[in-house]
Image 1 (tube, one colour):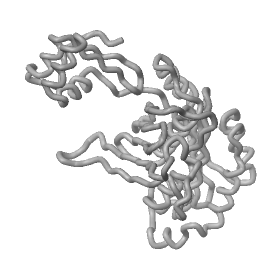
Image 2 (cartoon, helix red, strand yellow):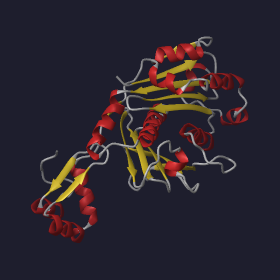
Image 3 (tube, one colour):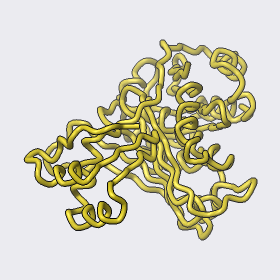
Amino acid sequence: MSELHKFLFDGLPVRGMLVRLTDSWQEILKRRQAAGGYPVEVMHLLGEMTAAGALMQGNIKFNGALILQIFGDGPVKLAVAEVQPDLSLRATATVTGTVDAGSSLSQLVNVNNEGRCAITLDPKDKLPGQQPYQGVVPLFGDQHEKLENLGEVLEHYMLQSEQLDTKLILAADGNVAAGLLIQRLPVKGLGNLEGQIDWDTHEDQIGLNEDYKRIALLAGTLKREELLTLDADTILRRLFWEEQVTRFEPLTPSFACSCSRERVGNMLHSLGTAEIEGLIEERGQVAVACEFCGAQYEFDPVDAAQIFTHQNSRQPPTATVH
């Protein structure tokens, strides 16, 4: 089963998480097979994003979805990983061009150095008029050099948006999507799970704390093959055998898609009567496939008409879902 492990370095202002997505990641790929699957390079990127999304969601106290997106001007128009508070997750990528073998991150999505990474926090209990929080960072470093490692992109995001020193190691293949996160916080021990941040002291320590630097250096020795093939116990023991580590009961990420006939009906309603009638006239029905899970939603002329005539447009009529 997929697992997410949280741990603390005793007496130090450093915490960590390790995620290994197995069945949940394989289910994401399986759902895509009907559409031809992903090129290997896109699969690796999307797997790393999914692992990173699970780590970032597990790292915050937030009652809502964390949505990680990468978009730009390469053959990958958009890649999305979405993780809910219970660590249910889904992911998809839109490929519009030819992906050459061995393509790097910049070749996939940042050809002209205009690619972006967006992290959105969408609360479940939004107030009227409240908008989701979104942070956006470029896919280049301080000197405008193209970044070829998703972990580096997200490390920049955490430093800029949260002033958090972070080390992030990511890897994915057709069986496993995995990641290791090490983060410095300004309080020691159990307190660093509670977000008790003294910002003045915290900012003075950015990039300077020797305990964090030592542990991050150890984390950086983890090889891709080790992250993908070794279990959590072995990885943590090999990396941090000289450190006092407190571990917590692992959490279990799982695949789940939040699409529904109701949501599709609302989307069709937003397109307007003329657009839907045009599709009905051309094709005899409106068929919509979920890009995340592949579920098919079909609306015949009667169904489509009821979307606009039913008093509660959020309750579209029942029909077959394949």
